[in-house]
Amino acid sequence: APARAGAAPPAPLSPRRKPARTERVWELRSLKTSQQKMGNVARLVNVRGMPVRQASEWVRWVPQKPAVYLRGVLQLALRRAALEDGVDPERLVVDSIWTGRGTFLKRADFKARGRAGLIKKPRTHLYLRTREVPAEEVAAFRLRLHKGVPRDPPLTRAERMRRGQEKSERRRDAPSVNFWPLR
Image 1 (spheres, one colour):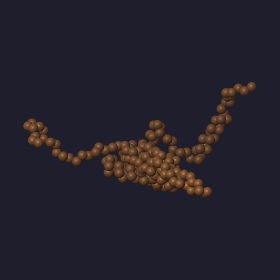
Image 2 (cartoon, one colour; image 1 turned 180 degrees about the horizontal axis):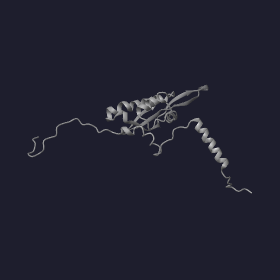
Image 3 (cartoon, helix red, strand yellow; image 1 turned 30 degrees about the vertical axis):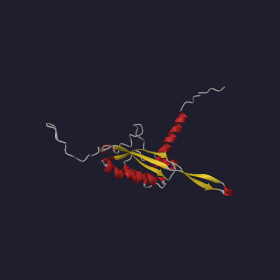
Image 4 (cartoon, helix red, strand yellow; image 1 turned 180 degrees about the vertical axis):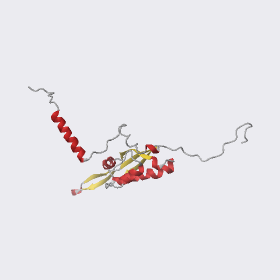
């Protein structure tokens, strides 16, 4: 079609580039484990707030079988974030992690005297939300996760014993108050 007089020339064609997404949910579906086992491992390793690369190394030393799946989704996020979303992998942190119940495979369980039962083989889904944060906030991101209150570092055994003694001393020194007068 001929161009109209006074119309602007068409813009040159350029490859369209997607804007970088700062947050994304990664998922592995129909994993051969139960939701409870996967959830226990996810809570045990507590990777929330860690940089994804550090979380992947952390999960490497967990002996439970579902940890293999967790490490897989962490590595998937690490590899594909830069390729698909244009995100710097060093600034990628784990925002949250959760599991979902998948379908159950149902198999026959043959018993004595010609009877049969049903075996349910569970499947589960694993979801991981990652977020890109500024480079200076990567280390501090984990502290801000729990309702804005930083978590205290774990106490040593000696500190726990000291605290326990202080509590027992407080109990001895505290005035006895009887809230329920029984006569």
